[in-house]
Structure formats: C-alpha cells, structure tokens
Image 1 (cartoon, helix red, strand yellow):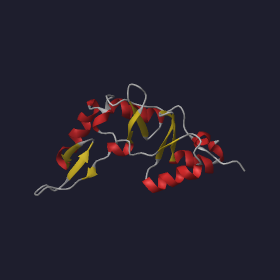
Image 2: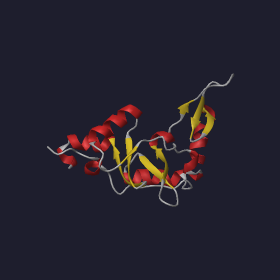
Image 3: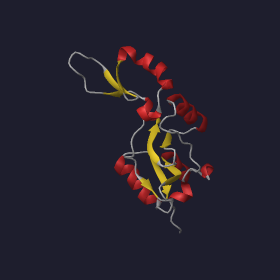
Image 4: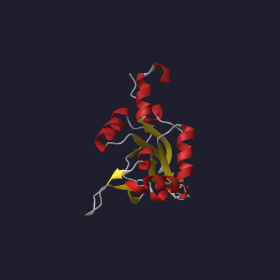
Length: 154
C-alpha cells in the first residue's frame, strides 16, 4: 500500500492575506472560502505568519490589581466592558496586529501523513503549511484528515 503524503491530502491553492490586509478582509475570505486559517504572506510570497479563527477570540490575560476581567483581543488588552466596541472597531485594523508568528510547523509536499499528524499533535495545531522552495503551495488541516475517513471526501 502506497503511503499518503501531504500532496495527496493538502488544500491547494490556498487563500492568503498580507500583513497589511484588514481584519475585515481576512474574515470575509475565511467566511467565503469556508476556512479557519489564512497564511499571511509578504510581497514576495513568503509566509510570515498565520491568522486563524482563534485569533478572533478573546483570550484571558493576567489581571493587574483591581481589574476583574481583562482579555487579550486581536493584539490589544481589553476589558469585558468594551469588548463589543472592540469587535466593531476591529474591521479596519491590520492582520499583522493579530496574526501568529511563524511558530507553525511547515513541511514539504512529500512529507508522510504520519509525520504531519505527529506534528499536529506535538505542536497542538490544526493546520500545517506545505512549502516548496520556501513558498506556500498547500495547507493540511484537521478537515483534510477527516476527509480520509469519509467516502464523500474523495
């Protein structure tokens, strides 16, 4: 039986954004393409980070004295009192303010499925970027793994 590689299951081409794209543009792309991860590429097409749906969610933060509820939200510290206002004003902010850096593992298209799954588990990520000569050519997500189980996914 032939081994499954990244090339066999990856999504390609991949929707991307630039660091100066707005968060509204990124959200619209995610919704339109039904994806929860957008690689962020520079003007030369090199991956410089990722933006995921999780980046649009507030995260609990360390609370300074006297502050009941403080969250990290799209690169800013916000309180519960102004969370709605922050969501409304986030549309014009840039992706570079909210994206995760390149701490996401990357692999080549010949990488085995087992190596990809091991990396997803080890790094606790749901997306693996697939590169060829340092350029993005695909993305493997948990959804792609799910398609391996479904007869409708082929």
